[in-house]
Image 1 (cartoon, rainbow, N blue to C red):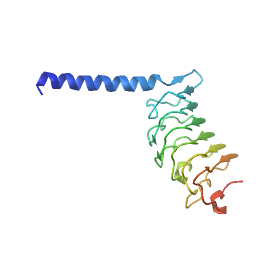
Image 2 (cartoon, rainbow, N blue to C red; image 1 turned 180 degrees about the vertical axis):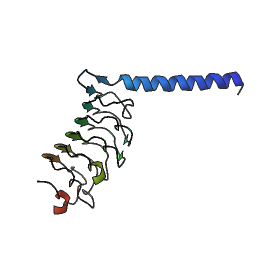
Image 3 (tube, rainbow, N blue to C red; image 1 turned 180 degrees about the horizontal axis):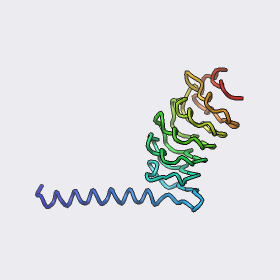
Image 4 (spheres, helix red, strand yellow; image 1 turned 60 degrees about the horizontal axis):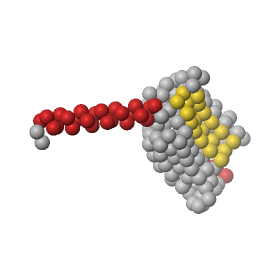
Length: 174
């Protein structure tokens, strides 16, 4: 490939990548109170650039597959996080670590096959947790909810593959 073509191709890739990123960022609308709506926007990842000004984040009904440790780390004032009805199959261990003010977490109707207690270990303020409609078969080897002293509403289970429930699964709940 001649050098001129190669240079043009590289610039085209860079420009298209930047347009894709800005399209995804513009798919999220936030009001002055910190309520951000990205519901049903065909997003395939959590938008970058989220800050401590975000109080409520609705990313439900998208095509998000992965939640990384970095996606929400600056959202320290987040109180509501809606990630239901996506394609999430992986949540990294510390993805929610910085969300100590989070009160409402919806992870329903995704593709989570394993649940980890580390996701919830710093969510002391959490009052509502929805894990319905995922593909996990059990709630895991250790209690998922032992670090959630304020949890008042818990939704677990699914219609097809939930096979076991044990008393230890609910250790730490009132």
